Length: 270
Image (tube, rainbow, N blue to C red; front, side, top):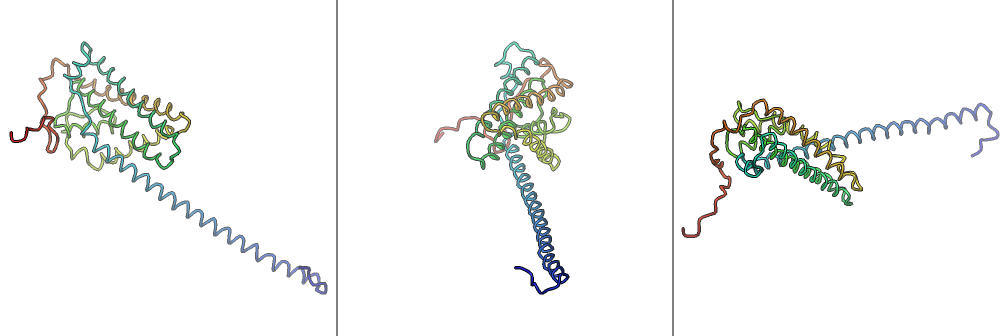
């Protein structure tokens, strides 16, 4: 509204300053309040996201721990029968090539699934990829130990936990330490396993790129990572390798409590 024509210039100026500064100060206060609220909201969101990530990694770790003892592993006799006439190094090369092809296929499958318009399924696809790749690589590690004559002592489950430790630490099993379930499931082991899973998760994020780019990237990265892991394991195993002719005859494994024996059940009444 126009100022009062009868008012003095000083009065008009003072009034304008008084009433003009009040909205400005309130606006500044309101802006500071909104900024503080936004920062607090972002902080709470980051905390919730971090909690969800940690919970997801813990679930994947539990799934891998449960899967490791069930991974089918071929012993040295079966491997030599399937690949006759090969030296230990040639046989190990064959195993690495096969494992790289398998993990590459897993990465390609997850990358192709990323094209589907289902963003909520992305974490599930990523978790499935990490678990699948871990199973292939644990199998590879176990069979490399067979090839180099360094099978750990213990039953199926204990050896599975030892190979899981080897996968987590990216080195061969230390045969001077008993492959026990207690050691494999210790606090330090679980922490290292979660760290390894987190590292794999961050490396596998490009697999979720759309338009089949993720499929090719996922296949390449998985093959590369599996080959690198195999090189580390083989380098460690070569220093302790036992020649095939020096190995004692392998005895059949005694299954752990609750494990299937592989034998057919007796007929009813017999």
